Length: 197
Image (tube, rainbow, N blue to C red; front, side):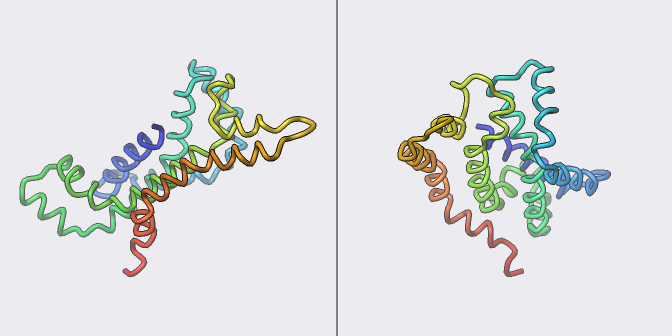
């Protein structure tokens, strides 16, 4: 769910930054990208304090907000580069046909951006599903923990049943593998976009 919100917000932001003359758009892009260069370890305490202060600590909402907040910069930067490479003639033809900015986005930009969106959807699913650090930061109740935290709890303080941990890890890998194989064709084409230009 967080991944869908993340891609939706990122695609709208990338479209606006790539196709409209927004003052300081280069600064906005660099700021969004710079946020991803910070190591998450130095942000654990501030993020935990902020979620406590606004009253969403120990909720899945907090986890969604954190994932969207820290992922939107990277995904917007990638989609911005892709959307800027789309032919200008297509947009001019759409405007001549009477399409507005919303219509161009829904009918032209999103369908043409399908390879990039599929590649980012596969990455977002893997990153969010395998996340442990933010889940342990904003959640307290064990029943709300994602599968990575449950795998961590399978390991004992003095002894671990490694066969159980291995079986759990294999089961945990199944959903991300399914998503990757579903988007495999679009994922590969999304990675190769611009390689032959």
